[in-house]
Amino acid sequence: MQNKLTVSALQWTGASLKVLDQRQLPEKIVYDEYTDAAGVTEAIASMRVRGAPAIGIAAAYGVALSVRQHCTQGDHWRQKVAADIELLATSRPTAVNLFWALDQMKTILATQLEHPIEAVLACAEKIHSDDLAANLKMGELGADILAGATGVLTHCNAGALATGGHGTALGVIRSAYQRQPIKVYAGETRPWLQGARLTVWELAQDGIPSTLIADSAAAWLMKSGAIDWIVVGADRIAANGDAANKIGTYSLAVLAKQHGVKLMVAAPTTTIDWSIDDGAQIEIEQRNPNELLPACYNHESSLVSAWNPVFDVTPAELISAIVTERGAVMNPAEHGVRGLKNAL
Image 1 (cartoon, rainbow, N blue to C red):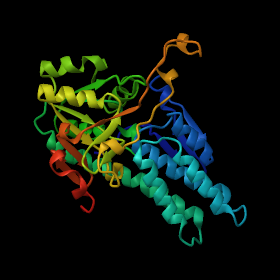
Image 2: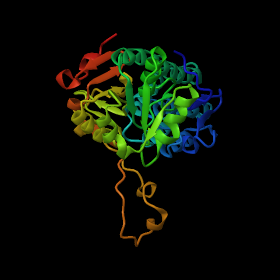
Image 3: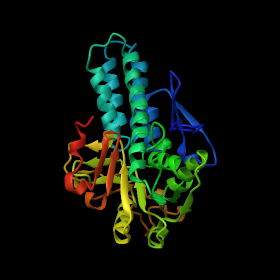
Image 4: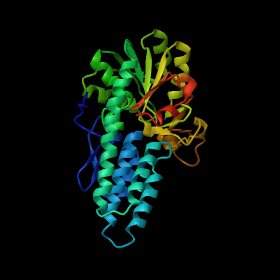
């Protein structure tokens, strides 16, 4: 199933990267254009572009822009590019795809390059196209597992807007819906409302009906028997199967266990951090409290503060399936995900 969206999160022009400002969706479709790594870093940090795979792809293009900018400026261009790579690495701490993509670019840059611009751009474009192919593959694998389900709930946005196209969690839902219509629910996903602003809009672009719910209505929805599965993406997965995703995923997993609802995590293998044994080692990004606080409390003398973690970690024992382009792991608490490392 090919992605039908007429807009995409990232567009490479040949000389710049156009980034869809997802903060303005669905009211406006606005692309910001960047010609250097500093601009791409700001686009990631400000959440113009978000979603672990899309962040990695954007960072790869950011390196390509850096090489394009510096490689004709003398013998020290590699040091300047290295500094830009370090800058890009500071943009978001939790999404492992960011660091994976930067490592891919470092590997290319470590070789003797006759045409450095062409080489790094080819690598960035491959990261982009490989992600789309992975999404299409895991969409079919996930749809196989969802066979017979009548209702699903998704959280945050793990669709084409968060990836190279098609999506991870929404890719599974897209592929499943193509086979047989399925009732789709989306949580609003506070405080950035990625579900309300992005997910239901994106599904509508594909002609897939969806029902938006308040995050706090999820337990009652599960108790009603309306859903069989929760399908989410991930920003980092530990070797034992613990998965970091948008804040609120852990609470959904706990509720799902109580109500006999299954939880699927769909993510490419680039999201697996093979170097960490469990989720306790995943750094959780804390964003500015002002994203959560009403404006009247945004002053130094206010007695009201806010705690604003962007992600939480769902332990493997609460996950029914982890789906990747290399295959699916059922009941990952029993085996972890290391078996996927060398899978074809």
